Image (tube, rainbow, N blue to C red; front, side, top):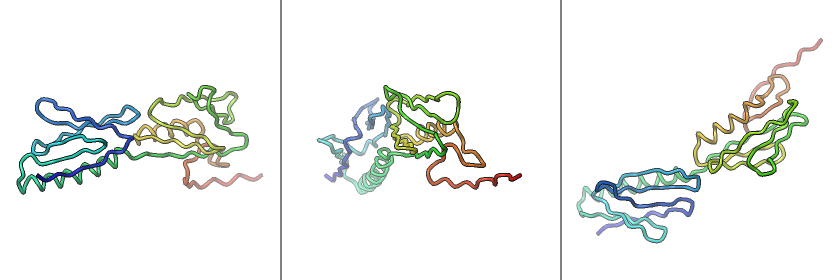
Length: 181
């Protein structure tokens, strides 16, 4: 009997579920995100410690090819599932500041308005850290991370003359020349 095993990191929880006679692998992360993968009927699965053990139910050359293809597919898929996506915003401007609220549930921005702008941090979806004028946004879902970074950036889009506002890290934009009298 031929078998293959995959290691699942501690960040990811894996469960085996049988629905209407077909086996499903359910993967979940700390942010309550779940993905489902159907396992072919020719392949059996056992969960031992932190390893998933895949084995052939019927040992034929076609099924051995299927097992090898499934090993490659699942290995690549797990790497993508566990990947962390990052966006970095740089705040440029004299007196512009970013801080957390007292209960760390919001980002408070002082960006030249008459009031302080507060933005809620999505719970369990992104992690935000602030270091001087750099805001780092991390998460497992690229759309949530990108949308949250765009939401912050839309509060103060960079000025086309002096460049005051939120810039993505490594963003290059040519500034207009200031008119002289």
